[in-house]
Length: 139
Ligand code: 5GP
Ligand code: ZN
Image 1: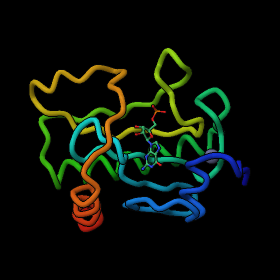
Image 2: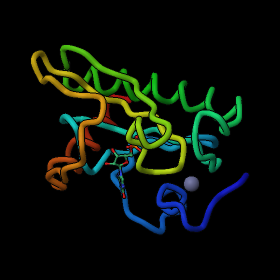
Image 3: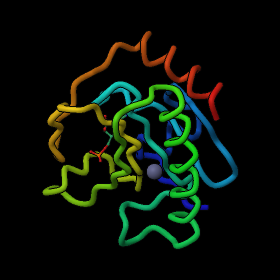
């Protein structure tokens, strides 16, 4: 399986950078976004390093979508949002900032007026930690 030693998400999978882990299996890894656009914002990534939708393997993207479905269900059960986006960004105009294919699991609230390129703002790490535990308990 290909990995990139300079990739921040490959480092998270390898345990070299800490994260608030929600779930992992042989092909995928799910964790909280530390700059959440909304409470409960999570990321799902394939273990295999690929930059974007153009280079990710069929196997890796299928496994990632399957895990994203599972995480979305846990987010819905835990937070009961009015909506939820599964989102995946490629290239600068789409505001891709980490060059390891990933899917956002993004709960939505009525009237949150979230834009596609929402900008990054650090969340409350203690709150994110507590939320990760609640999501793990609802998998
Ligand atoms: P993109 O903009 O590439 O679609 O999304 C990348 C996401 O990764 C952003 O939402 C950003 O907050 C998140 N991110 C960047 N660095 C880290 C990190 O070190 N840990 C975690 N948990 N999320 C990160
Ligand atoms: Zn990577």
